[in-house]
Image (tube, rainbow, N blue to C red):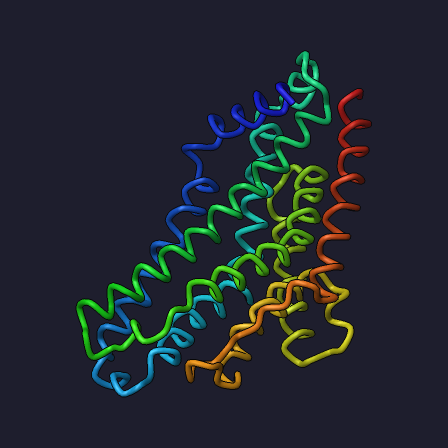
Length: 270
């Protein structure tokens, strides 16, 4: 465990000034800020909307962009950036010659990429809620305060995080196999577009394709627009974590993680 913590800390110091680190922090802020400006500029047109619809439109716009394109491509970028440091400096052998187990080194790299994606999605939740509530303050006609979406939004983003783990493991493995960025990026981009097409057209086996999982995960919030009213008159939006796509995502994440370790194990002794 001590070796894992040392390796994880090392990954932080090596990447803290890179675009991979800062994109995970700044991307949520910039997207939510842009949407805040958009809603503020058209506040007169949407002032008659009930609070629940305002929240669904505001958070749904961000989730739609995230789940269909930005999150998968961010994963491609983060997974490659974590390993590119060693590729670029040709320090894999040096790294594995340290008195730290190879599993700790490999696991720390993977979980650091895991950590960056988690932080990015957590910040999306915080900034979405923050800017939404700020809109109700600066524009009282926008009745965001009528509905509390905190619980629903947190569950949707957590489901989105679980749905992304299969992609993360695959892209992390590709970034280990290829030194250049074009191959993992190209594969990731083509698979992302294919996944969106399969899920968007309602193919019944789309859950078997990991790059479809983020698209399927965000449908929980979309279904909220047609949800039945609860006891308080507000719609009750259910977010089911025990779906086939999440099960497949977690299974692929585990299998590919193990496969990647054995590949690294052989690579390190060359």
